[in-house]
Picture 1 (cartoon, protein in one colour):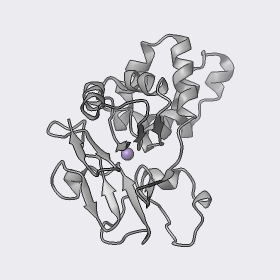
Picture 2: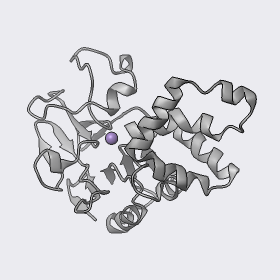
Picture 3: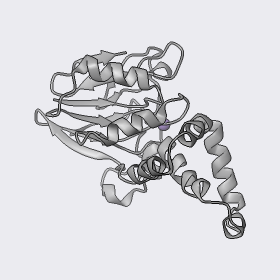
Picture 4: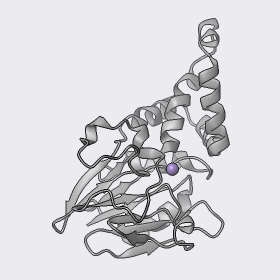
Length: 230
Ligand SMILES: [Mn+2]
């Protein structure tokens, strides 16, 4: 079975409960459409779990990109050279990340050993920008947010990873006629007003706001189209 979920945002308990609910086995594949980290307090526990599972594929979200931009230089030992290397651009990026829930991630990251920290940073580099899969003869394009600067005939490798993680689609205008685009990033509460997987016009939006007070972690099985909620 092929499953898709997104925007876990540090909510390890919901993630663990979801794996039990879908009874994820080694024969199944689970795609996570990014934003595993930030806002919630247990991002590292989720990353450490998924990196041990070869059948879980992680796609970049804007929060992983913000983390990747900052964590490398934050981890460096402070030397005269490293201090000289800190510039305005880096500090603005760090401040953006902090405002977007990065503070919780740094607090969590600090508790890890140097070795564990390095494994996390290395693992982040294995995230992909998007995935294309076919299930039951239906093609799917899996991406965190949408396609910025979309043109129907533009090859996918001409987009930058940043084009995939910020854009909110116009749900009335499908990108593709032959492919269903599955995204996270935009909580369905902001699309339909409900924490329910949103399906329309070759879009499936699966971020049901797991880190919100009344939000849910959602997961969809592409073989059966069954929806799961925690
Ligand atoms: Mn996002």
